[in-house]
Image (tube, rainbow, N blue to C red; front, side, top):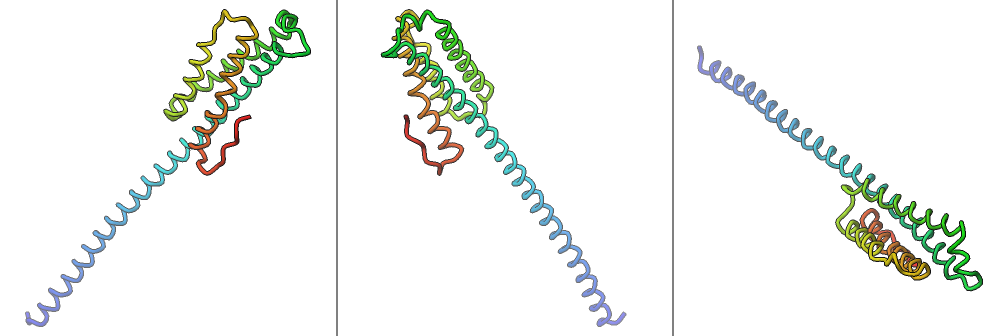
Length: 180
């Protein structure tokens, strides 16, 4: 075989081998990039789903807490009405209904908290547990107006901080409304 033909044949074989090797390297790189992109998308999807679940949990808990605070305010107002008789209100069916509503909404708030506990931040959980401790610290043997005032204070003081924590975590750029 002529050296020119041998050189051309070696060059052609080298070119074909180089092309095949380059294609394999490119294919491997493309597959790795595709896998990396898939993993990033999966992580982003999971993060978005967790964010949505946390937002729903915070919304439900804060809504229940606001409802509880309104119920506590109604009970407090009934026992501190300057134009009404606190003793008469205390012995009325309305008092019993208002008291039932207050504790039912509080149980609902605690249930929402417990249901969502794994999604909540440590700051939110610590704040909620402070509320629970405040409720447990209320003297059950105090006279009804004093007890109603203490319970109302616990719930009323809790709404703004818990709302602020939730907003800062689910929508950091949203302004927090001042407490009422």
